[in-house]
Every structure is written in structure tokens, then in C-alpha cells.
Length: 497
Image (cartoon, rainbow, N blue to C red; front, side, top):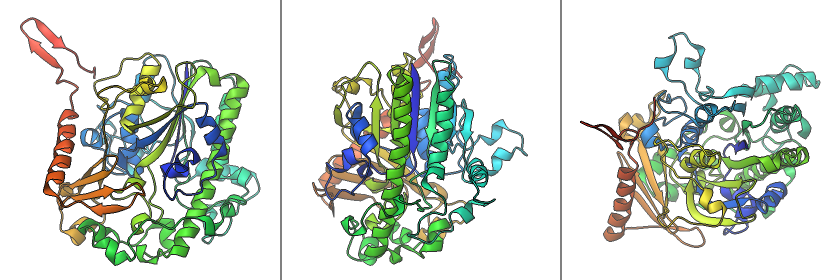
């Protein structure tokens, strides 16, 4: 069986039509191809990323392990080489895993010479993958394509220098998303030897939020719901000391050129940002639709396990935030679609909480490969046929670490040492508990309209804290804890090095 593992970057769950239409005040996502695919696959409505930003999320996704175990907690934090990836596991079974896009995996500095160029970037390729078409932040391969198409020799900053709300300087068929799709379709048209394993990793709808025509104006701004947030940024900041510090931080990069800081997020600006973002999602839908159509036309679809998700979500003005920092669900709740060529109920919808740590075990289970003890998650294969394990989780757990070793803003603003900057969150159906390593916890009740109110009842706080602690204890690193050396030899099992 083939495996096609598709990820988008910074794509929140309510921006998949099949999910958004079931949520209050959903954004008007235009995703007809993926909505159609959902009717032929299994849709997971409560799927959560394990961490933000991109590097930690992908480390958890590819290794099946929580950030509190793999400890790759920020872009640029090395992934310890002892943590194996899904690519390494399937390679041992004869696959040659190909990467189209990027994996944002920071190399373990102990495994390479001091002058290795991989030590100057967080955009390394995860162990086990071979390049199909590596496309990093500098967009080198795409920029070569644009030059060949007559746009001139441009830098990535020049390509994305368009003013907020204006269409991109390139046509939709030449976008970064279309380019990567074309490269994957070339691979597919080459009739790859079976079975194959491919990770197709799109950068969009991650900023810069510049979209080609007609996508930049596809969604009418007046039809876009307002952000869920306190009436003023001061009132939002008053909810927690961390939020007060976060909302004072100026925007960086592309967003910093377009806006100053969160206080500039008026309703009109948020509507514009959301409109462009939804356009990029619509373009992503169009390009993934091309992939799915080609798979079906080639006869490969019915020999391929297809997994589609995002590394993490995006705040889009909720909580007066842009990006994925913090602890609110919008930054962690993401779409998940899985289509098994033989073992599934087409159109089935799963409401149980699932997590990124479940993805590697699921792909391994579908391929008949034993799931390593390293994996903190569990296979989702039973859900594909309509079953729910009796002891399945009742909440999602995710993390964010806000230390900044370059700027040290956490020390200057909050007076916190590096190891006091962790946030561990438990998100159940109607509650959220965020435990901080160095700050007071935040606890919210979340109603059916997704509005939040503070939880102050000590009994509820204790109940939620105990549940989070039980989870943390049960999922502690355990690759050798199931093994015992006795006079009769080794009892139990362990993961090989």
C-alpha cells in the first residue's frame, strides 16, 4: 500500500468547510474538493496539534511523541537523534520516503561536524526522507520556476512585497502552492515503483498572506465573522499576565511590515487578513484536489492511504492575536482527513479527541508495522471502521514554549528563566486548563458558542489539574520502562537504537 501524507501550514480547523459548517460563527471557507473528499474518507472533527510553532509540531507529528518527551520545543531546538521518525520506520520496511516541501527539523548538533551548514538553520530535512522537491523559506526552486516563467530573477521578499490586500504579482497557476503540486504530479506521472511513501508539505496558508487573483478577493469581507475577543485589547490582556506580555510584542517579518502590533488589529484589518487567508485556503483546496484527481485517474487512489492535516492552526485575530503562540484552541485545532483504500466507512465523522501523536502510529498500523514504544499516541485505525476504543482520551493535550533564546523577551518582560516558559494545556469539550511552568494557570469554561469565561471554583481547578497530571505521568518517556533485566535475561520489550 502507498502512503500520501499531506500537511498544510497554519490551517485552522474551522477553515475546512466540512468542519466549519458545524461550528458557531464559522469562517466562510471555500473547500469544495476537500469537502467532497471528506464524503469518501473519514473526518476527524476534534483533532489537535501537539505544539506550536512549526518545528515542534512537526517533530511531534513525525515521531509520534509529545513535546514533553522529545523536547524539540521551538523552531531551531534540535530533535534528539535518538527519536526516530515515521520515515525511518517505514524505510526499514523497504519504502523510500520522499519529501515534497519541508519538515522544519533541526538537526542534533552532536551528530554532525561543527561546520555543518545544517547547524545554521531550523529547516533541516527529517531523518529518513529523501528529497522529492525540497522547498524551504527562501523558495529557491520556486523562484527558479518564476524566472523561467518570465517574472525575472526575484528574491522571496520581492515576490511577497505586495501591499496588504493587493493581488500577488504572479498568476495563480504559478503560485508556490501550484508549483509544489506540479512537482508532486510529475513524480506521480513517472509511475513510481510501488509501494511508495510521500510527504507533501505545503507552506500555505502560512504568511505572507499574499494571494494571487482571483483568490485574494474570493471571499467578500462583509461576510466574514468578527474575531472572538474581548472588546478592547486591554481587557484581553487582563485575562492573564502572559497575554498581557504577548499582546505588547510588535509583529515581525512580513506582518511587521504591514502592521505594527496587536493593537492595530481593528475589525476592518482582521476582516482583510481573514479574507486573504481564506483565499489561500481555497487555493490550497484547489491544488490538493488536483492531487486527489490525479491519484484517482492513475488508479493509485485505491492503493494509497491518504492522510491530510495541518501542522497547527492560526489565531486570525481571535484573542487579539495573529499567529500560533499561546494556549487558545484556535492555534491548535486543525483538520484531519484519512482515507484507507479498504478499511473504512466512507463519510464517517469522528467526534472523539485525536492528536498529532496518533498519526505515525496510524500510518504504521495501516501498513502492518509494529508501533514503537516511542509513540505516545495510538492508532486511529479502529475509528476508520466506526469503532471507538473504550478507554479513549476525553481531552486533547498540547504545549507551547515561549522562551526566546535570541531576544530574551521572556526575561525582560515577565522575569522568567528559560525553563519557566512552558505551557501545558488540557482541552476537553467544555473546559480548557493551561498550566504554566512559571506563571499562574489559566482555566476557562467554553460554551456552545465558543465563548470563554474564567473558572475560579477550586474544586474544578483541582479536578482539571489532576487529570492533566495523570496524563503527563502516564505518557512519560517509556522506551525502556517496559523492560527488566533479570537473572533469566531480558523480560519485556524495548525500542532498538
